[in-house]
Length: 545
Image (cartoon, rainbow, N blue to C red; front, side, top):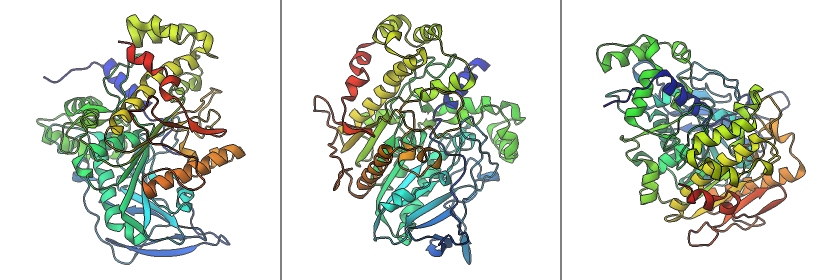
């Protein structure tokens, strides 16, 4: 029997996922390093398997933008598996960012697009590649806004990597599910796998090593990589994985993502039937109710992108992945615990103050203070009869404000507990290097109002790896050192499967057998081990029913 939800339930789903990956999407504009007068830039041409592409070459880098890796998912191909690119004659210009996939502006990313011919990627390399170079493929976060061209990979390329950043279908275009529709709820994952197959075929043309590919992502992008670790379609497409602030083994107590948002056993995984129910609810106002699923689907595929985007919450309601299908047969947490995943080295971590981003967005950014009364209500909603036990462990007297106290509770209960569970599962089978990004003065690069103390916020480590002017112009000397060190360690991991290297801080593997499994704390004044379980009160949370 299919579940039936009233409007409040649907709005709760949308509200939950609307904040799912805020902050991991993008800066305000795509990277654009086209040749300019006196800029010391010229063009360079490379032959791919579908035709030649012309990019930009400077003294230090080569950059190719907007290379198609799959055909346009338009018309009858909307909500279908990605299809091959039609070869072209001549030389395709790839000196400018390609089109973004359909999206609407959000409070943290004022970008929009109605273009479905958007399955493109970008390649950044050193000017002179030492062949064969390790390849790093970046899957951006959020899932409803953003694009690969927002991530300037030149710093990573300076470390000898060939870096590929990817567009994929977002929101309803990537996660729509429908009775009888093959691939329901997994089109974003299928796009990412198509991009990885493109890398396997074409990495060598750019100086990269198709036999040494690292897939990396933050937030929703990291959760997607958790899916790829367990997906049959991704088998053999990558050889290492980097997960930053992923939600792959995270649950969601009621109210933790905002008042009225229900609890869920998993944060990003939904059964295919549930995704189909959500899809039906979110598209019910589009006038496509018809006799039979096939006619409804034909009607929805014929609608203009603009009309679909006008449905409230329709992009945010699909920041989750459907399982129980060909692309994702098993629930990923279950597969990880059973060892049914690709056994590749993993670099994985979270930020120290993950949930401050979401509390700041919900309250401070809209001028609505989070009070002592809100704290009590939130504890009662999330923890019921255990609320007072949690209050005793996190008394308001220990925090500068109720908002920071609630952020600490949810960071520890939801984010740190989920991160620890995933590390435990992975470390049973593969080499794992764990970290915590702990720079509590990390510059906020998102255009958020208010004066909230975001601390070491969700996705706050991204500008330390990719060029981001809004953040880096405010870096201190110590933060520049941290950025350089992190970039070198990520590059070392992509090259060898370990983040260790000459003149880099020592980093031991995470081992479950250790009394305190090794987690590297990354801060401007300290790169050293941290007792992650003690810092986030995990023994308390494991004892709590």
